[in-house]
Structure formats: structure tokens, C-alpha cells
Length: 248
Image (cartoon, rainbow, N blue to C red; front, side, top):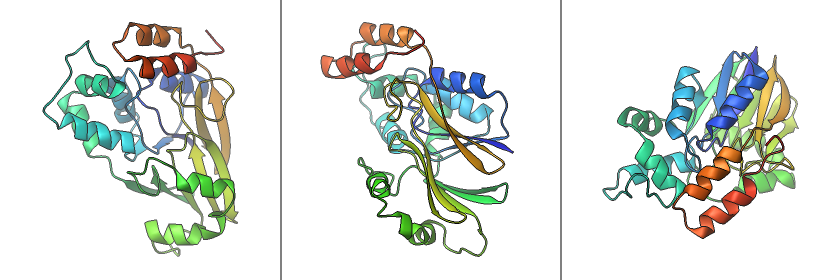
């Protein structure tokens, strides 16, 4: 079985298309949240997720967009001053309800391995303590505690993986035989934390074996949209810095 593992797409359809072109077919897709916000194509990204029957959870940005949609005030279409405003204005009611229905956690078993999928330990956190703890290996011995907290019984899950997003860093860390933390990183052009150049980080799992991957995609047209936007300079300037690509 070939499993595509993605996270932190942030409305970037170009990343999904680049990964699909690179990988061809796959049997299942797992997504650890932050599907929208910070990108131009929230509707098309949601449609891709639905068309591919993605097993997904909500990220903090997904929850924030739903909350923002529910507020009465809106910036006029075409005059948005943030990615969030653009996202809210693009969403249709059916896509909003799909986003609203995303759970905080999913548990799925594929190829005899159980995956507990969460965006983060706490969905509302804006920092990522689990990632920092994993970097200095403090939390690796506590895999059992986290699994018990999120899932419970070990007996039904002899092989277990905790799948997180949120940090934008692609990694796999073995906790013990049959136990591992994995994170596919970010697919958004300005939020890829591993690569020297922006692009899409993701993971492919073939028959249980984890492979961390990266693919570049053109961003010149994205830079043009940023330039043409009504975003304030404090949003526009860093977006333009990051929106560069090795393949432009």
C-alpha cells in the first residue's frame, strides 16, 4: 500500500498538484490539518481533499477560518487585507461545512499500523512544544503516555505512530520498536521549514516504510498575486521574500 501523508497545505493548490504529479497514484491520503488560510485557493484545496477521500483533521487555522466566517463583518471581495479575509470570502457554504466538520483527531489502521492523527497536542496552541521536546528528545520516552492520552488501549494497536502537523518540519522519530512520531512538514511555499528553497514537504509510506520527500513548484504567479493584493506591507513583504522557487 502507498500512503501519501500531508499537512499544512494552507490553501496552496500548486503544492497539491506538484505532489500529485510527482507521485502519480496512491491508495490513501492522511492529512494533519491546516488545510486553508495563507493561500489563494481554499475552495480548490477542499475539493481536492474531498475528491481523494482524504482522512483529515482540523488545524488551528481551519478552526480560526470557521470562527471568522461566522462573524458578521466582512471585507469586500477584491479588497481583502489578509489571507484569512480572502479565504473567508471564497468559501461556499458546503465547503465551510466540510471544514467545520473536521475532527480534532482521527485513528486509522493501514497495513497493520495504527496512526493517531492530530494537528498538534492541543489544537489551539500557536507554539509547538511537542516539536521542541522531540528535537531535544525529551518526549521520545513518553510515547506511551501520549498514546494512552489520545487513544487509550495499547492491545488493539501493536504497531503505532503518532502523526502531527503544525511545526512545518518534516521528520520521523522512532520512540521504540513499532512506535514512532511522524510529521510531513508544510506544503505551502512560504512555510517549508526543512528545505533550502520553498516547495512542498510531504511523506510517502510504502508498505509501512516511511520516506520524507520534497518537490519544488513555480511561484512567479503567486508573487504577482501578492504584489497585486491589498495586503499591508507587513504581510506582503515577508510573503514576497518566501515566494521564490528553484523552478521559476
